[in-house]
Amino acid sequence: MDSQPRTILTRTGALAAFLTAAVFSTSTLAEELRLITWGGYAPDDVVAQFEKETGIDVKITLSNNEDMISKLRATGGAGFDLAQPSQDRIIGVQRQFNIYQPIDLGKIDTDQIQPSMLKATEKSTSLNGKQYGVPAVWGTSGLIVNKDVADTVTDYTDLCDDAVAGKVSYRLKRPTLIGFAFALGEDPFAAYDDKDKYQSILAKVEDKLIDCKANVKTYWTGGDQLLALMRTGEVKAAMAWDAGGWKLHGENPDISFVAPKSGALGWIDTFALPRRSENVDAAYKWINFVMQPEIAAKITNQSGNFTASKGADEFVKADLRDAYRQSFDEKALNNIKWYPPVPPGLEAMEGQVLDRVQAAN
Image 1 (spheres, one colour):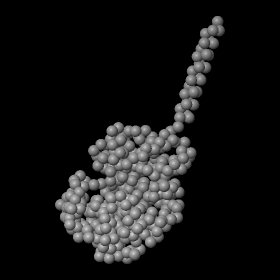
Image 2 (cartoon, rainbow, N blue to C red):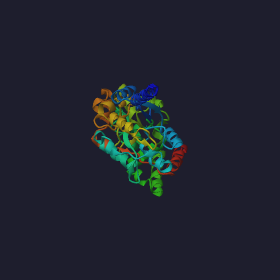
Image 3 (cartoon, helix red, strand yellow):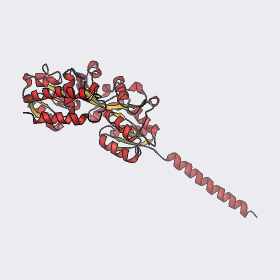
Image 4 (cartoon, rainbow, N blue to C red):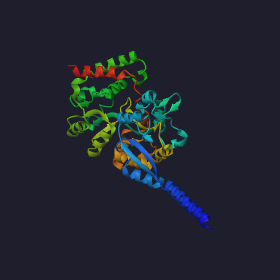
């Protein structure tokens, strides 16, 4: 007679055990943040500290702009929870492929972020009243100069001064066109939407670069090549990137990175949320975590690039911090010309100019 109740109890016990196991399994299943980013932007010690403090596992995929776009386009914005594209590679891609979702600034501690960079990114990553990126890591192109010519070379066009003839190097790439345009008193970014105006600016730059050819020791094509030229003294002044200048300064204090009078040219790599992110909360936690000054300094020490974290330079290793401060006071920082998105057709125009400069005698 008691066989039926015993069967019920047995089944009830089994069900309770199953539910307990299921709850336990769910509660112990770790959260995961899938981050697609650049090399150096997620150092091992930073990842370990984040995982320890939050209990969220971080899965890193190293990438670049083209690869990020390709991967997110192929999946319709799935596969990753947080991405780090450059600010000028978001709006055009979003308009065409719809792979990102808007940023909720209310979930970000914006007090930790440099205001000028936050403003620049808001402007360059907004579409239809929605913002798709916030600043993360930044860098600039400017001048690397030996102290022998530091009084002469203070802007891009000073590379054409007779005092540095045969001792100059820069790349035949679009940053050179942009930098020379600003130094000639033009605003190429303001002309992005007026192709005729932009063409007239390019013509002015083309003439200057052709006149300047006699000053050029060589057009550098790789970072190692330029560093070697500066180390040997074959080149005394160059247009190049800040991290390279700081590296050289660490080896030889006579060489410094200088923000040009017309403004260094700045790029910003952002935080952006893929449209089909599965863990948006973890993404916001990561953003707020790595923008803490002491954490951001670890990223700078690893990558050589500074972050948008306000006050982080206080915690950067001394030699890099001092070189940075020598290059950028508050005025120079606020004078950075941040790259906006490039409208279709402009790069083809620029390529034709660069080809003619290369071919000129």
